[in-house]
Amino acid sequence: SLSDRLTATFKNLRGKGKLTEADIDATVREIRRALLDADVAVSVVREFTAHVKERALGAEVSEALNPGQQIVKIVNEELVSILGGQTRRINMAKTGPTIIMLAGLQGAGKTTLAGKLSHWLKKQGHTPMLVASDLQRPNAVTQLKVVGDRAGVPVYAPHPGVTSEFDTPTGDPVQVARDGVAEARAKLHDVVIVDTAGRLGVDAELMQQARNIRDAINPNEVLFVIDAMIGQDAVNTANAFNEGVDFTGVVLSKLDGDARGGAALSVASVTGKPIMFASTGENVTDFEQFHPDRMASRILDMGDVLSLIEQAEQTWDKAEADRMAKKFVDQEDFTFEDFLAQMQQIRKMGSMKKMLMMMPGAAQIRQQLENFDEKEIDRVEAIVRSMTPHERVAPKIINGSRRARIAKGSGVTVSEVNQLMERFAQAQKMMKKLASGNMAGMPGGMQM
Ligand code: GDP
Ligand code: MG
Image (cartoon, rainbow, N blue to C red; front, top):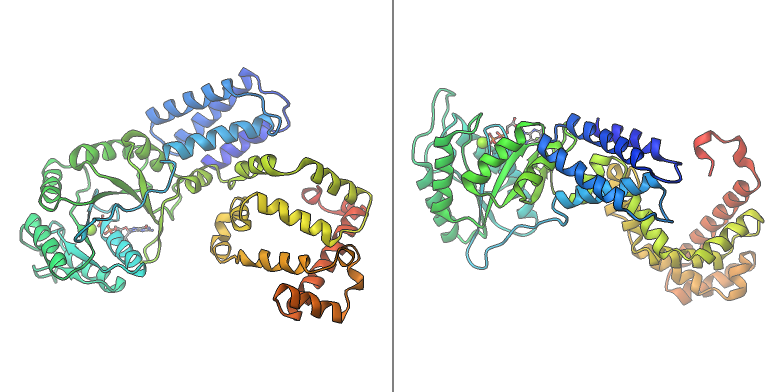
């Protein structure tokens, strides 16, 4: 896979003191091959690698990063930049319903997306309505009704759904779109999502129909839905829809598959349009806003380690770090003063959650991280600050009455103070064990 190859490439670079032009060439060749394997369009790969090479050659030698990390950083930054930089939000109408039209090939995931998007909007307090303007495919109307049911949002479909797969609903999709939007306006829905028909390949007649729908309803957003597994065809399809309906944003569907983001890179790069959402399964909740930095991390598959390193370098107090290291080597006791100093360092790096989010593997436990309570750090700090200087360096003297005083001073319960004392004692023990050389017996990967 792309990520495996890039990781392998970067491993070769690790430990090198200085990056030569030959190193850069070899690396760029690997990146090119890896991107092509991931089905990123050839033209996009060419431009991307040229850019990376140029930057790598011109890069100043950084003291903070080794050459391998430096290239990872450049590749990562370029990926994020092509993918649109910031997360792009829906452009909401100032008055009346926000009109969102869906376009894309048949099977891309438009109808499924209509359900997910409306469900997501509804959860945020919006009152979306769906409009069934795909009268091309048998069952399309029925499918949208099922999807709407699941999401708990109404569907505008004046024409009867079909009961047999040989039946095709009749009617004019442009008129249905127009009437649907009028209905949404009349019933005071604040968002209306118009599902449209697609063909298996790009088709002039259907593109014209999509254009007619667009012109009839004047949407705030035209979302182009594309299957992330589509591969090299992504560029042609995206170009055709870009010219055909001039979409305003992209939705990547089926990102739950093996797709490594090749299509994302191609589409974003050739159209310059932002990717706004990702669809990641068949359920109505398998849907998320698209984050360029997360996609870049997915492509690199290593978390945002680099920005973490970078941030650490920028904010970490070297003297403080050295002091801690010396303490560690000298096997001095770790005190609450040290603990406080470390917390200050972490605070300087931004939020704890943000920091955890950047660790490799964070994607897998994202849900838990989202729930991380930032206030926990505030509570802990308040407790430590309520200790006297003497208590901080000699925690053993903190008896019951002292604990009660500390709890009172920091506005927490005594049991919270007890918990912290316990955790602190454990951490202290752990540090002792590590420092006393028990590390030698540990498996290779565990050694610092
Ligand atoms: P449309 O023709 O563009 O409306 O596409 P549909 O919404 O009907 O989806 C086509 C097929 O892809 C259906 O079987 C969906 O269940 C499936 N599908 C859509 N989105 C996703 C997704 O994000 N992940 C997966 N695994 N399947 C999807
Ligand atoms: Mg459909």
